[in-house]
Amino acid sequence: YMAHAIANGAPLDAFVTVAAWLHDVETARTIYTPERYDRLLTASQQAQAYFEADGTIQYTLAATNNEAIDLAAMRWADPAFYYTNPERGAIAEYDNRFPIMAWEEWLTFDALTAADGIDVPYLMVHGDQMALPDNAQAFYAEVEATKSLAWVEGLQMDYYDQPELVSNATDLVADHFDNFLR
Image (cartoon, rainbow, N blue to C red):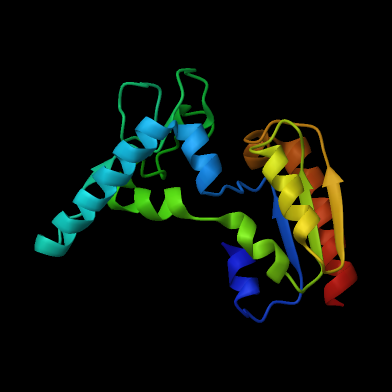
């Protein structure tokens, strides 16, 4: 989202992504399968119409270990999944709900199109074990501004809360901003 903000003229002087989720429609259709993609899109449009009719927002779970909950934003059978694990992302402050009408905007969002609009120094911190590494590389390749790439080890969600990885990413981010904002 910040990439789109910059591409649309947001007055920022430097930019960093760490473990970014960079999808487009084609990727979303593949991840969610064409059949589920279409069901989610239809459900989103129906929920939007319901909201416009009476102001009620319909919600589903944001994250679940039950793959049978079709409208859930994130379904993962592993009970250790970050967003459903109370030792990690499923903390009391996390409101585990997703507005169904948001599916259409999410599914049709194209993060990749913003890359060629990045006109400030950019650092990408990403890796093979993170979300959509091919899309990350494609995004990075399209950025024409001064840029640097830290292709790192570690799982996507470990960059959310694992001290060593977070510290490493934070150091890279701080160095980038120190170099370009001073």
